[in-house]
Image (cartoon, rainbow, N blue to C red):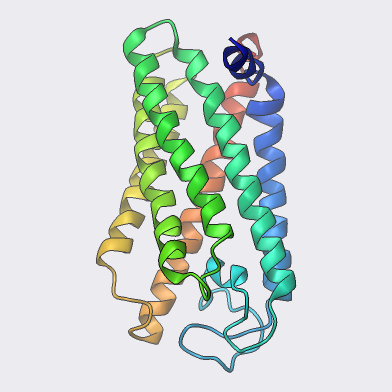
Length: 235
């Protein structure tokens, strides 16, 4: 009963519109600040100074020691805050969503499935933050890669339920469909692309595609908030 009341309390403008927008803005600013404070070094060149947008992964910001050997305290803290906020924001956001699809049992179950995988993705975000890649490379890579695998299922499920209902206009389902396609392509990159350790061009390709999918992720969630803000009768 208490859990049901808690879930119902999430169905409001703050959780579905304001919080995601504030989070996305904060996430971008925190990542920029972390990039500014990152001392330097890449997985291929330990001598570089500062953060290179096409040569450094987001995860480089969360290393305990930068690749050039310098202390990475400030960048690490900012990265941990950003990823932890991401994990909690998406947890609350996707816990709230299934409530809009209760009228039809099939849609509700599909939404629940999408939310379960979103919780896995959210946990992976927090796990990525608290396993610096230079100290715990295996669990870090596992968490980082599974973020996108989990959210691939989530985006596919919500594409279906939004298409099947009138909760939001179909243009928002199309937004989720594009999001699903982009994540699927990135998961393909994770599986099939050459290792970033192989060459300079392979590193650039992997880094740039990571940046693009994170941008798409932010834009997709931001886009959905406009759907809910236009349906104040639902909140």
